[in-house]
Image (cartoon, rainbow, N blue to C red; front, side, top):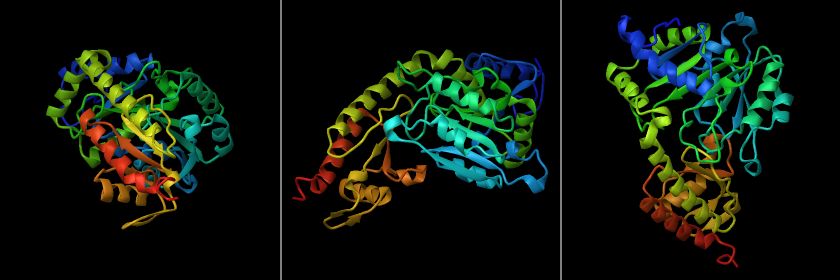
Length: 356
């Protein structure tokens, strides 16, 4: 195995080869493969170096490239594409289909300029998890377009609720050398703020990411790196500690899903991973709220709930779907119960019975 600067921001001494080994073992467990042509590179924050390295291996005059992004998406994806002088191509999904990408739609939107498809499973903001069969269908399409690559964001891979299972896209036949897998420690290991993540992929892509990363932030500090190794030392998928955390998340999810399904007009896709609900509140659009005014969209609805209920939610427009609102359940069950009661009280004057 060849290790190439597995730890950035520290002197390349021989002991770093053993230091990097837990990250490589973790990558192999998820993808099922580890070859001398592949390296894993620690970075400060994977999103800061992507997708530019994918898009700059062609003559400048032909770089009007497209990045395909299913919506709802994490807010940074379209801006990352624009930062790399690419055009984001947004593909809508449906709450009735659990916000999963339709392979037929993907096939119809691929052009000669398509260079990158971004997938996030489990998803932020929807909590959707791509079944293996659907990923295989997508991989079959990708295989027929040799210039199309995959950025697989798997940050929530260990926060998943049975019977759903996580499949790393790079583990699918023929996709290992077409995929750049990004991951971070902030979610599963509760290390938000440590700014520690990693990238696994073909050597030339990761090397390009490293060059850009070195000019952005140099690399993660040594304390964060040690903490990352300690997190991986908890065992596969974080061991018992992470399992207990996921159990608590599931309890909160079940409570919220039941509670919001009882509210008038709301549509819900039950999340299979992560810790978000992405709920369709469009039933309340177009209604007048006394002392507030007209609710026209997800932003005004969130302002209304903040004003009347003192509950902070995130407008779906930020994620590419204005019909919905994102709710995080990375909070105690007690606080979530109080939040639900406040939302119910704020929505009551807008119900069909109240407006008769």
